[in-house]
Length: 129
Image 1 (cartoon, rainbow, N blue to C red):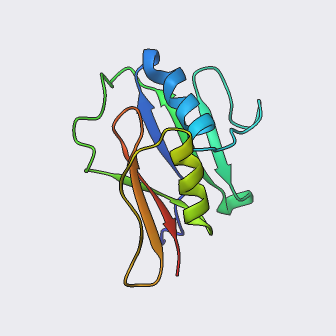
Image 2: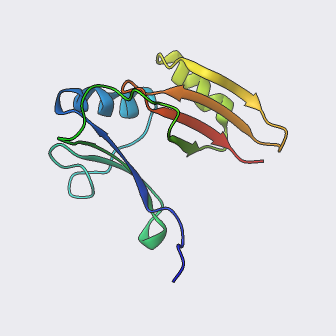
Image 3: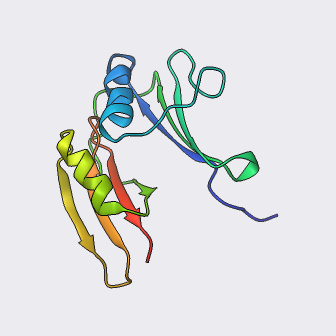
């Protein structure tokens, strides 16, 4: 048995912060939520890339074990893949995202830009070499 890849990432939040977090990823970051029945349900929103067994999902959902915002935002970082980091970052900045690092060209040939979501989770745009 081997691990074949990443199936997805779940970002849990409080019920009262759920709408704001979904609005951030949809309206500010610019992700497209799955249609109803394909991942958008009451109190759960999924953003999907790919199809079949190779699909990857970012899921936003409330969790009764979560309170407040992330007090240790450097523990986990989610990388969002893009082929035009500068354009994506420019659009996000115009919609209010404050980048904590970058956009910057990396020594390995790619680019990165780091930001935090409204719950304090560290996210990164990643453009491969």
